[in-house]
Image 1 (spheres, rainbow, N blue to C red):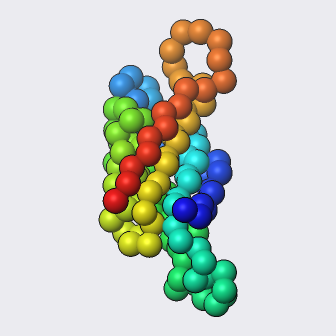
Image 2 (image 1 turned 90 degrees about the vertical axis):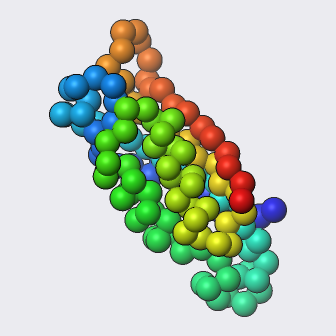
Length: 119
């Protein structure tokens, strides 16, 4: 299956189990791998035979910058389910949600979850 990659989409959200995360918010990054048959779009140069990246971006933005979740696992699940519901050409999606500098003890750059869902 062909793939569309969207890397390091950046948003500001209010997800986390600590009250300061829901009050102050922080930056989140989302990576997507979308499995789509791209042959028709490639031979016809017709946008209707593929997925509009701008529309995918706006959907993910609404989720990450919308309702606050406790867990980034729930953010990823909501993104995956919404993408599969909204874009019928997408057969499978992999969603990675990265939370840079979470407020937990230790020295590291980020934490992330990655899930894959199919239609």
